[in-house]
Length: 332
Length: 77
Image (cartoon, rainbow over all chains, first blue to last red; front, side, top):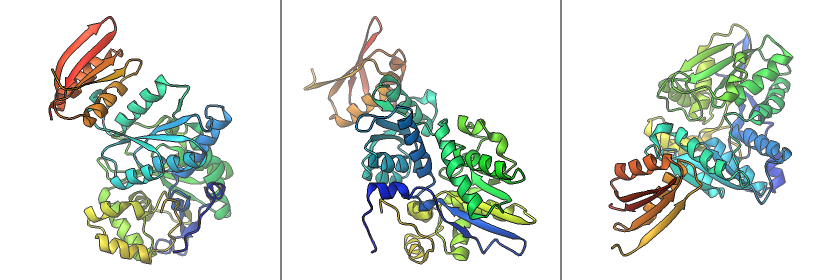
């Protein structure tokens, strides 16, 4: 194993500047397709950017003091991992409020990064809703009574989450495609990725089209939201006019794409990345340069893929050995 | 009289934190033990009473003094 120990500073410098790789299986003479591999961030997902920018912004505004402030955030996935990892490096205590139904793999990673976990259940306070809504209510109540001690970044409304993409990911894509991008595909969770990147790209070329990918209702795609069943976050509402078109992908289409991307591209991707691939494949583009955001890779989904009969655990291990573009993640 | 009575002071906390802290304390206790919870968020009355019922524990007593609530909860299972 080529394990090397990186200093904290080196880890933080690895946030952003993720690779853009060509998807040969979708590209043709007229249109070139690319995936932006956000799994190459140090803690394994696009959320490293939001976490880093929100903490830096809190420090600049004097809301955070190293060694004193406790960062608390409700999340069911990658933001918890990113905040736990990055805040820990920067000298903060982190508390993550997570639905008890969240994946065991995710909970284990967050705990291993030194964060305290509060697990919420739907029977706690039914009037606030279910799942992440319970976690949001608890995190809010904990932070509200102790404002001198706690800081909740709140990725669903924090402008720094938008800025990380407006100043980081957007310019990266523009440079990596040499200004040739015509269509941009991504999912919507908080809205930070889609509004940040699209706003930047449209400032460079107003003709760039943004296609938002949403999962079906009752979906199994971690990190994405369907807006017929859940509310649009504040951060998204501020700039939702950047979206030119929507496409809905079913669970089945996304999970089929997990297998297809591995067969055709030799990449082991997450369900949300597979949903983006499925959307790029189905959406008609006559000519141009298409970029889709692959928010993370498939490594956290071994048990889900076994359950969904996509890969048995043995097939998964073999796929991972064969897979291309596998990044070095700090906690692995 | 129970062998041991534990106490949780959730005064000054807003819901759902009092019910969350109650849940954590109850999970740490042995069956048969009693927990006294003090709270002053009016929403705690409903939240804690319902949570205790739904999870099959026993609300032995609920005292109200001004804005303060005092629950006695027995862990049943």
